[in-house]
Length: 418
Image (cartoon, rainbow, N blue to C red; front, side):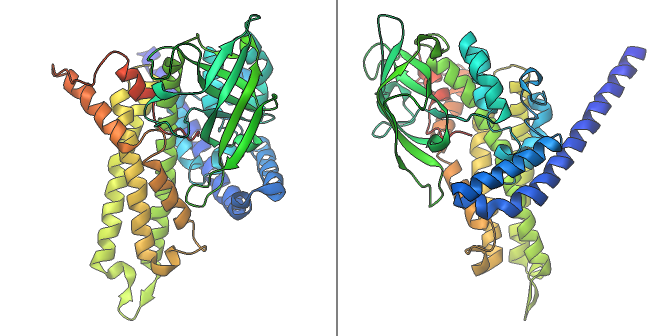
């Protein structure tokens, strides 16, 4: 009983600590990050200076890189504890970058699957925010849902190093990144189910070029890149040769779940704006909130939020425990993307014309909601993947469940990095 009591006390202390951190993160995003959003959205030198200032404040406030490993300079929070904070960070698109948690996916992938040189040369700098990374998987002219169609090739030279040639697009942050992880074919022909590998490439390498920016509904940050016989050291392979999809699938499980958490935060922001508008805006027929159709918007939005959050946190719990979460992540990803679009749409409707202009974040939030239904795999991919897994559990064997199809489904999709 004494041990049980001690464990209960420790658990309660952890909960209080996480709740306190969440409140501090939420306050930081509200008071520090959100006022800078117009500057950060515009990009350029002013945005870089503002971001640097925000990062310094986060470090001084003890809020820097909370989910990243302690030994690398992070806060060491496990995914289960970080989940509540991720919602608070995600209220603003710039929250994760300002608070140093943005490289979580790359640091996790490189720490698990990178060689000793990768771990020693890059991880501490990534956690410190001194260097930036991005992830390049999707290609022009090839469906993002079918990684087997990858045309980018990496040829091995006699000394074990690689020469990489190809083109990628919708690569987040490529213009300012120091490193890019590239999916490339190292053996076989386009369409083969084997022979895909991941390579970590310094963007300062000869032959690396940013071709153009690809605005998403007018928002900056996505790029098309070209690799023209880019030399890559032998020890910059990530994972085993030909095993890229296993690493990518692991990465995307975590990445999709982090996105869902941040979408919850953004949807909550839209919901709060809608409720404030409904409660304070009056016309000749009285307060907006007294209108039944406005009340229906509030109800449906709250229902969407409340029913989606448990799905997302169920996926978090399974990933945190190291268990299979393919079904749960697929459900959460589709539900959260739809929910963000629905809640933001209702908030815009309640705001009327004011919801269409630059005076609220609603247009940007709506844009995120619509893009969410495509990036990291469109709704249709997750719907079919989840349904196949469920049906196999009931003895069905769909025609499309051929060897390798499950891996492809789990690792496919337009990958705009978190």
